Image 1 (spheres, rainbow, N blue to C red):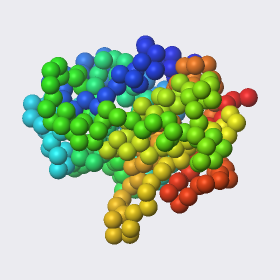
Image 2: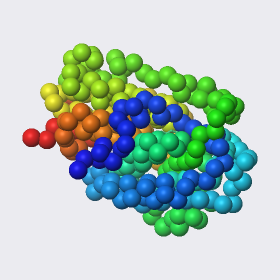
Image 3: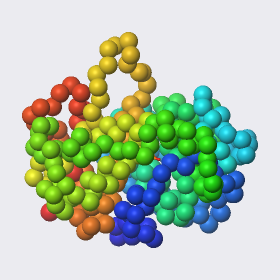
Length: 289
Ligand SMILES: Cc1cc2nc3c(=O)[nH]c(=O)nc-3n(C[C@H](O)[C@H](O)[C@H](O)COP(=O)(O)O)c2cc1C
C-alpha cells in the first residue's frame, strides 16, 4: 500500500493549504489524534538507511497561554505539544529528518491540526531533556502542533511578513533541463509538472527555498543552491538546507505517488554543465521500471 492512501484527502490539497501556524487555540490534541499520528509515523521509512528518532512531546512546563520563549523570539502561543526529532550528526540524517517529518506535518494537516517547523527560534533545553538526547545525537528541529487559533495572530503574522512567507520563487529559478542554463517549463515537465509545483510550494527555513532541480530524461537531480559567503560571515553548525531539501523531496515523492508514478531515490552525482561551487548535489529520483 502506498503512503498517500493513509491521507484522507488529496496530498496536493494538503500541500496547498498548509501554512505555518504559530498561534494555537489552547485545546489539547485528543489522544485518538496522537495515536493516529503515532501509528502513521510507524509506517514511514527512512531514506538511504538514515537514522531518526521522533517523538510527540507535551512540555507541560510551558504555559500555553503565553508566547513561548523558544530561543530569542517568542513566536509560538497556545500549545505545548511538539514533534521532536533526534539523530546522529550527518547530512543524510538531516535530509531524512526533513523528508520523514514533512510526511507527519501533512498528515497532521489532514487531521485539521496546524504545525510550524522551528529550528532557528527554539530553546532546546526542555526538549533535550524530554527526548533524552544521547551523546552523538543532535536535535535539529521541533514542530509545534495544535488547533489553529481563529482570528488574527499578530506575532505569527509579523513573522510571516518578515520572511515573506506567502511568496515562492518562480519555476525559472528552480527547475532546469540537462544543465543549469536551460529552464524547465511547466509545459515540458509534462507528467511531473504537478509534483514540481508541489516542490515549489514547500516550506523552508526563512523561506529561503534553496532547492534546485535538474531533469535529465526521466531522472530528477536535487541540488541545494547557496551563495558562498566570505569566511567571516559563514555560519557554523548543522546545515538547514538539507532539512529544507528533504521537505521538498517528500512533496515530490508523495505527489508522484498520488499521480500513479512510482519511483525511487538514489545517490549518484551526475556530470552537470554549469554546476558551480554554489550548488551542492543532494540526491536523485528515478521512475521504477
Ligand atoms: C527547516 C525549517 C525551519 C524553520 N524554522 C522556523 C523557526 O525557527 N521559527 C519560525 O517561526 N518559523 C520557522 N520556519 C517556518 C518558515 O519560516 C516558513 O515555513 C516559511 O516562511 C514559509 O511559510 P509557510 O510555512 O507559512 O508557507 C521554519 C521552516 C522550516 C522548513
